[in-house]
Length: 206
Length: 206
Image (cartoon, rainbow over all chains, first blue to last red; front, top):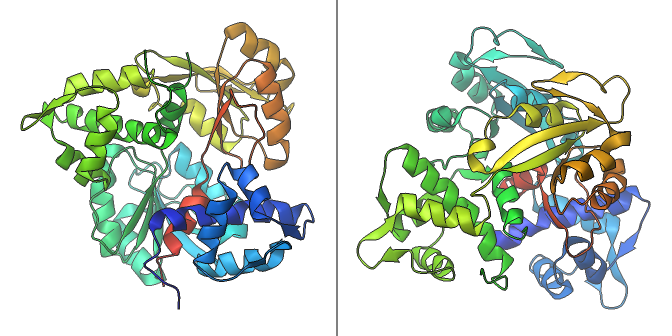
């Protein structure tokens, strides 16, 4: 069993390791080191070794990490050695882009349905999807046993939609609205907010 | 002058404080506390006080923080008490959504131009913009003295485009491609990668 007491900040670095290893694998690489991973990611080699050692013994001193093996192990640890179905809430520009994005499937995720509450959007096609009525959202998500939602609604509606998602059984929300959400402790929230990243960089600009 | 030796992880929290304060201000609020900010953000009150104290004395013991004043101060610290013009590179679905997104302007940013290299996209209108030929990118960005770019190109082109952006004088890149970029130390990179956030949450799901 996995040790769920590992700090979330460590868990947050594992997807970065996995992404970097997958890029290396696509280049036909077989072996890497904590030094090389660290240089790619701007994280110290010691930190990477310490993070990985919390989950097992993945590399040998002097021979480095076997890339395909470490990908397999990290995928298992992160529960992405399977495909998670997701609901997208909001069929605006960004919801549209997410629903058509092809980059999720290799990383454990697949958009399954998309909802909106605007009459002019309901029934419209986006790629392979038909936009469904948000009035049916709770029932449809619950019936499909979907646990992950991407929330792409205006900020003022984000909390009300979140409450419905939780009622529908959703346990992980990727929130694109620039507001904090109140959720019970068993529900995870992560944010996508480009302005936050931009402001972190402008600090350093003259 | 600002002390540039403050750890980047502290700088990374300031935009979250600013966003939360701006939400409070929109609700007509005047005063908050490190406790309340901490509850919103899942960060300890002590951490928030310590972060802010690195930049000055913004609140009084027992009376809390004046919201408009702290917004003004954080905006100045983060250099977003002005509007930064940005270039978007890549006019696919996500580039499209970014170019039309209305949420940047209140937070210090404005898309100024968008580029693509595909003949069928060059010249097309996206909102108020006409997609420009990527062949002219270096000259146009340099002439406009744009320092920030949002990179929304396929992963395999990301590094080559980055090299051009740096040549054009760009100093901050928000990278939507799921690959690491090699940049000189004076250039900042931040990533937007939804799969990384999703994987951080699936760790906790059964």
